[in-house]
Image (cartoon, rainbow, N blue to C red; front, side, top):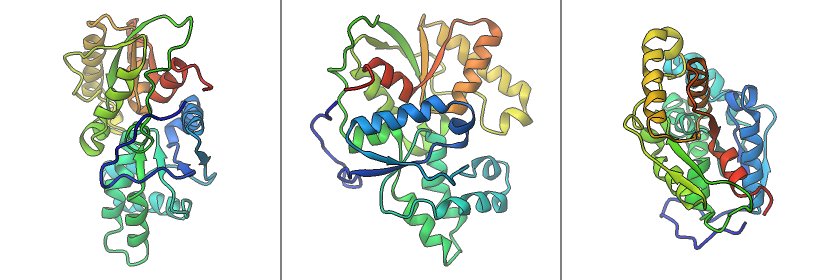
Length: 264
């Protein structure tokens, strides 16, 4: 599928032939289909996707738990894996936010790894952001014969919304899709309660937050919740299933791939 007309903000690059994928540990261990579909979307746009096998975690769990040394060790293990000056695409707004905004701070006083972290952070992009702002993707002609119409709600993680500012990119992609109606709900801007280790340390509060999120989404009559963050998807999806709520969840990459028929 060919991208539409391209208009770049000053800080967005012209597309290159090669990109890296940083798949995140949750994609790797729990939602591999989201990683595969991210690769397929990028390859369909004519890109060669490179996946460094040594990658693991962005270090966010340790960082948000107040353990900067452990976070630094995890992040340092990733710095040498993306040596070519290619964009690093992340199918998670929260992990992309960690890499773009917090890695430079973690290594601020390090004369060796500080410059490496800042250089790498400057070419980190959340998946939807990259598809919209760099590739100029236009899925409006992507109708697939036989697919029924769907009504969906979008969940944007706290990191994606507030650090990366990528809610608008997700909205733009969903609103392009023929046969897809996106509806908003009362608690869309609120945290789902996952928050990494927050859900482990404060399970009662986290449970109440996700219950509110599920109820608010279901009140719209939507058929599906779409998000670009697997932590939120796992939390919301499991909470909905436990409550018997009619709220299937799907990663943005998988939803886009499915709704546009896969191969161009």
